[in-house]
Length: 92
Image 1 (cartoon, helix red, strand yellow):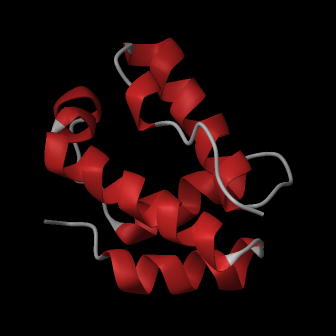
Image 2 (cartoon, rainbow, N blue to C red):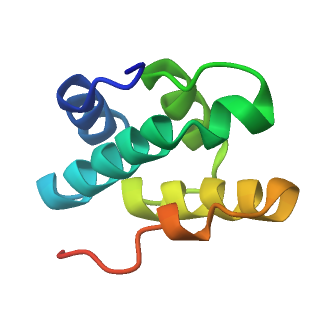
């Protein structure tokens, strides 16, 4: 597995704020996306913590879940099949 959820969770909180729960759910969704193999198949490169952080940095302002959903939406438009990896609801 290329995604290491615990360090990713900590980096998400440091970089984008939000609650522990938001960072945790985004890290879990990133791990699920990585496990699915979809990102690697579509993009042609490995999904890593660094890739997630870089992509979320490009998103408009927001907390981790907001940024994640923006990126997942971009992947959905480009490739399709990413909607299930979005964060539908999280605790504040």
